Image (cartoon, rainbow, N blue to C red):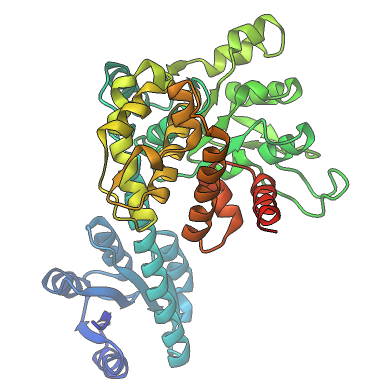
Length: 450
């Protein structure tokens, strides 16, 4: 295991040599007598991760050294050592990016703790950068699977919208991929390093939703035992995705309109005006223009949300993408469930292509996941597909359909339970049924065995 490398910078030879001797038991150490020498050491030794530097030095002081390090491409942690007379300068250095400072004479126990914390901080920062990179790769401009002209048109529009901070409205049926489009817009925008906060406007009651969005002050209502920041504050510097915007109550539409106009709001029960910098992306499967005519949705809010509209088509309007979607998610689910499934038979693909997919891509994904779980070979065949699919596509049942369906259903349920190691909630999710339904089915199987 490689040791962390530390550069000790001090114009006092005794101090830097004593520190180097003490730290060399746990770290690889380098020394420099001034800022210019430190820059040369950093250039010549790419393994240096931490710089422990005096603040007051001739030729180049610690602040200038910090600025030059920050201007470079290396992720180096700066810790300053200073006398009591220059603590103010050390605090200023922290504002400019230094990790921490220690006062002379140095407490070695505190030095050990500070370096340990600095290493952990750097590790977390590196992991965060890696995670953000992985997320960006997941939601890059090609992550909306398909090569149809409709998908091409959407991606061209998404690229143009991503380069701006314009408010976007995503329209389309449930399961078409509106949330995925919102993710792509955010992670390819100038605020990609900021938070991406999601709210389902139909999932919360009106009173709860207002607090979730705008936060509340302590004592604002019964049970408000402390101040809570809302999603708008949490999304500051990033994107707020308002899903199912058509279900937003009229009382909250007023507050959202004000935010879109002025970028400000007050928490529930509060009087302090809060300003944040948040991009709004909203989505709905409702006809908002019809809602405006019926006075269920404010026309002024609709126009504010409708700066850029992206209509995500249903799967039945881009059938040429089905094969590509199947292949993409087959590989993904095979890896997730550790199954050796590498393809699908022409007969199974024909059944899939013949279905109209009212639940769109989400329904197709669930079908593929179920088929991967059910498959006993390296290819998905017709008998691996959910029974509802083969029955609906054929348009008729076999003579012993009831018996066959019962056995197929039973087989699917027990295979799902085996895959999830008996986790009934996860098995129900894989099967696309409710947990109560799964328990009822299991009770039926137990009754039949008596």
